[in-house]
Image (cartoon, rainbow, N blue to C red):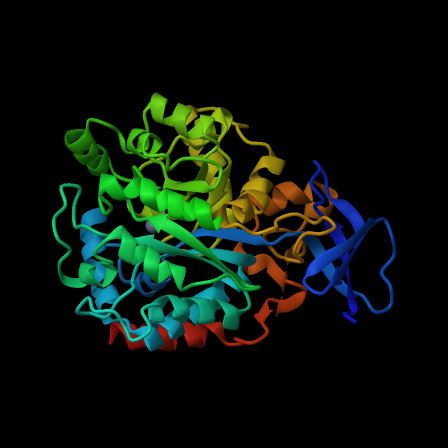
Length: 446
Ligand SMILES: [Zn+2]
């Protein structure tokens, strides 16, 4: 018989406009089996002091980019120059060094309140482009890393077939990404299967990296297996120009024409869109993964997030290139960037921003999580309300303080599937996460 664990939250967000006091969350196995408000803590309860929310979903990660933090913020002129630097790191990784880097980075994510990550994974093969003995050795490395760091992973196994939109062959480090054909990609992905902490998902790298003829077949594979499907869309104006020249369509129009958009699809970035693109994405209820701190760092531009949401697209967030790992900042940036662009305040409600962080992200990644309700996976995070950043919020609006002032450093407790992964701001199995990151990064950059 599985025993029941009791967690007692001083304050919890149960989906409404205000935080609820004294919430008892009962967990059986890895799911929530009761939520009761306004009750005292039982003697055996695990006390959660502060504000408890559903766990945060990081919908867009390239985990190995974490090695570039502190090495690429200055002296690199634009996105394309930054990509050259990123490729130098990609060239050096093997399954062991990727595991070490991913394990430490996912531990950093757990410390920031992230309970699930969507890993947009395209580093499939060895440095010469040949398959490893296990063709999924690199994917397995990131999956094991997430498991060992205690967070859920949706492995968005990425199809990447060509060097540019005209079909140039992949060269240099890009050969590591290359599955030759969409059929070879599908055969490799067929060998992967879901587990308690793993969802297998699909990704189309971009309309640059996948030929038009492969788009619909990849979408069909994802649909047949019930997998989430992610795709980079219009991060850079150059992608739009190349797509118009090649197909006479915007990337969004091309994806719509090939049946890629829909409720199980997530468009990543969606920065440079036309009014028709926004309508196509919204009408199809395609999810949008905003990666605001990366878009800032790479000078991508400010995407039309609010118009997309009003058109019907759920918004979620990702830390992408990991210039920082702080989803609180990603979410509030959606609202604050819109204020800068529009000259007005108050675009998204606090509850909408909380959904961006939690339920919308979980849905994009295919997890039955992101809400503190009976039956959901028992993934939750507690934010302290007594730190220099959050103090005073108990008497005001703790939800607003969490969204507009809290940082990763204010997270005290993280629970994933009923397991306490972070306690008092320390990772249970990676207690010196900084040292683990240092060791993994210096091994890669040596
Ligand atoms: Zn990306």
